[in-house]
Length: 316
Ligand code: RIB
Ligand code: CA
Image (tube, rainbow, N blue to C red; front, side, top):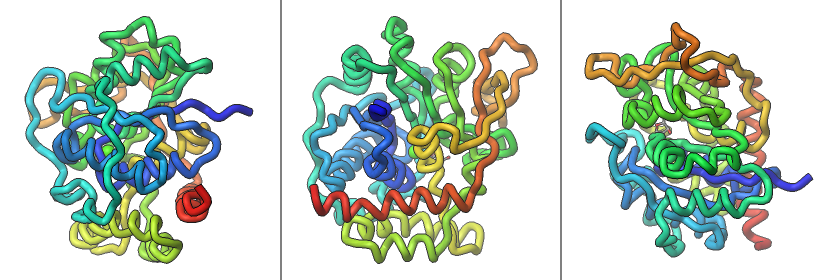
């Protein structure tokens, strides 16, 4: 069976780094491109980080293009450097090799070119704010049929992580999230905090990753900042790799158990801006919302794949 074609849209980002390398160590998918967006840190930094991560995995053949530096409509200046470090990679960006070249086409054009050239439908995995995906579908509605499905990390039905009501990726650009989650017709699986927060990995998991080889150790070093922040915030030796949970679903469809429901995104300016809720009316299209999984199996599967990073790359 030919591999699923995949594009990751990302704001690296500690958990984005794990998600990107998870895709690169998964034989079920062919990563055709990486596009970057503002989010955890500014666009220039997320873009540099994505390019360095591809070099780390010896995959400088994969094009990286930069997308939106800001939300669609209203500014949202809050970044997430507390959780990701000011360099976006836990203060360890300089432990990664030099960046691969930047594709000059820009994210929307690169996404459109990949979709046009694809002989089979493409899976898009946005794991940051949804700005680039909203722009792609607004500029190229004719390409929606080339998208097999979107697997997005974002949202929270029961309480956010950026405000009490909103999760970071949605809060960063609620208007873009409304467009993609409520108005577009492309099939979408949303992977919210409600499931990702249960999929934490612990110190033993991280120590096994760190001991597996130089590339795994570099990734574990990047994740270590998130581990320390989690310890400070929750008093537990754990870290939540939100984006890796979503990318494993993109790579192995059916990993997560979903419930179909129409969603609304709060775009007002009250305390619940960016909240994602089950929509009262069925005007909004149905979204597959991931709410449960076999967590021990998911943890083991993500680690098993990442551990091949050195083995696979060493032979590359
Ligand atoms: O809320 C978690 C999401 O926000 C993840 O994508 C993380 O990388 C941050 O961008
Ligand atoms: Ca992210």
